[in-house]
View 1 (cartoon, rainbow, N blue to C red):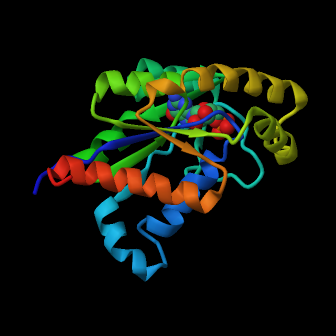
View 2 (cartoon, rainbow, N blue to C red; view 1 turned 90 degrees about the vertical axis):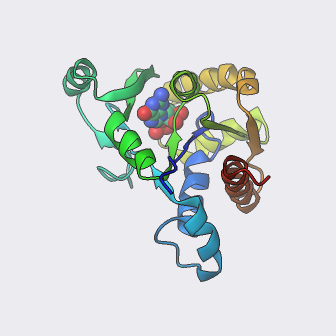
Length: 208
Ligand code: 5GP
């Protein structure tokens, strides 16, 4: 059994709740899940998370090495030069990058790894890993998206406008993704993402 793990790319415009969905996914199906009834899924899903590096400022509640590795622009640019990143992008004025070593080690060991990255990064990943599983999270509507971004209160008005503009572009390109999940009801969305991953595992194992 030396089967390689798969890459699961989850994208969504800011404010669609992808962080909450991924958090829920790990709470219920991750390594440290307390839900014994999910044991069978947990063992099958073998979920890991790719912690990206970023140059953006840490938000309240975020932790170094858990949500991101928070680094300076100088360090990020040096790491680009050293080939540290499998892919990276500049998003609304900050760098974000996926660390090559984490991904390669995890899939070599048969783990499935979730990359929570934006659309440009997703396209780069598919170029390198054509069988990566691409999931796009949709907001119920753009009005609801704006409401969520404003009520979250983590960004200033300019950044919110920038992120909404970017959201329009990303939503227009959502067709490039194989799977789409609407985050209307959180639990339903979490279950849908888990089902997608389980069905992809089955498909790869050859019993659809
Ligand atoms: P945020 O600042 O809200 O945490 O993230 C902004 C955007 O950057 C989100 O769409 C997030 O998914 C994306 N992102 C986070 N890490 C990476 C990464 O390593 N690579 C790419 N391409 N995008 C990322």
